[in-house]
Length: 469
Image 1 (cartoon, helix red, strand yellow):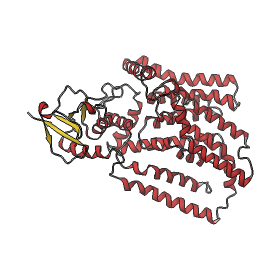
Image 2 (cartoon, one colour):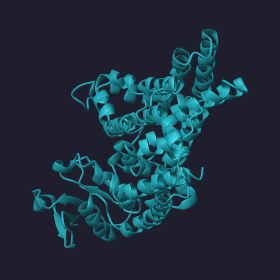
Image 3 (cartoon, rainbow, N blue to C red):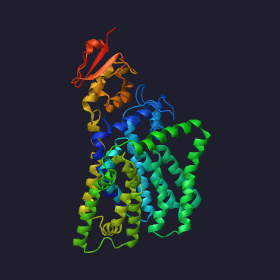
Image 4 (tube, helix red, strand yellow):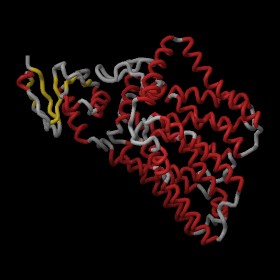
């Protein structure tokens, strides 16, 4: 541990440096703001578990996602308040828990260098992006990774208990994100196929038991509650059937495969450089451990089961890939684990360069912890929108409803920010004239005909108009 400690510090420091401009500043990916607002409203008593509330006019009767994520994040808002920092820290904490589970799984496969997956995590741009953007998949990773971890425990002790926990993890995963949570059901089969340490009957029995333990709580909740049944009827119709038949966000259903491998480019480069240097300097093949190679193959093949089902739909986004990455980083790390272990075991802790590395890692950690505070109170994206929003919100009472012109009907970030930070709703029904009208300065509008008068505020991109009596 003493020899690897500086590498853990370096990984944590690099992680904090990457996210530092965003951790304590406002501005977030649209979906993250939307989810935070649902969660915050649940915490303050607006909306219920099965009827999440966004605003008075937008995303009314929302059933596009299972409600568990809003419940879990809502608990953080209940305990710590409704600051914008809460969704940031919830998102970061989710990824940190996912990383710890990944390291536990890595060690369960008898790999010796658990810091390696951390560096491969850092090499995946989507992972570091997701940390500060409050994506539902951040929470989903916890339960899909837990399910696999529990199954590996069941192979050596308390079989039924850990298989039950593996299934229960998928139940919670389903209630967080839906059917995409079930890809770990394939793990016993791929483990049997590649590792060959269980027989076919054991693999089949385990798979059936995990499936039953995961699906029975879901079926019971639907059977016992008409409200739950109605919720998932809507969810299935809107998100599943609608997503397969009507939603198109990409030009090719193979987009997700291309995105998957493009996210791994830096990882492939790291592996390539390592293999090249190792071959030239040490003149040994770093892939000689066939047992580790089989484990790496297992994890990479398994990661594909989180990716390939997405091909069924033309509704695809890069962050759908996130649950696959813990298993990818275990696969890549496992390939070089033994050779890295040998290199580190030969290090003399008293040698000068290693002592220097320790001091550098400690110094870098101190800097990385301090760095986010330089950005506190600043806006990391949508700066003009947020600045104008704060000025306008000082004039308009909370829970107001604003009208907008037709040109702004798809400015969803506007709807999300106003609802999240100031409890102000924006009405997309252009036939209804609310007391206040929000409009971009470059847009034209017949204010006299609509009987609106401009409110003089020092805004950059938006003007607010008040309806005259």
